Length: 134
Image (cartoon, rainbow, N blue to C red; front, side):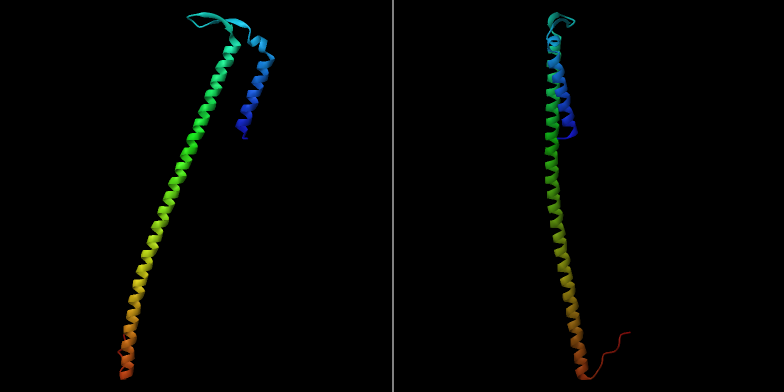
């Protein structure tokens, strides 16, 4: 339980104890003026009902905000996973393209070496060395 939840429960319990101790005073009828009408009712009970409605509203708003944050977090995690897969696929295709390019270059180098080895061996067998390229 985090500090905010513990503190909220402590305040609610404190208000409940205060209400129980002063229940006779809270339920005593009094004159309440609504500017357009005057009634006799227990002001403390009306005040407690209003406080209860505010508390329930606060709890519901907090719950909805937390649920929205969880949904957004899940959506963000899914998007990150999708982008991660996309980056991996792009990297894999780039590596494959580099590997193919490297293999083509190596094959071309091998062909040149084979061609040079062939001409060098033919020059050696004929006893004529190729001119030096300096």
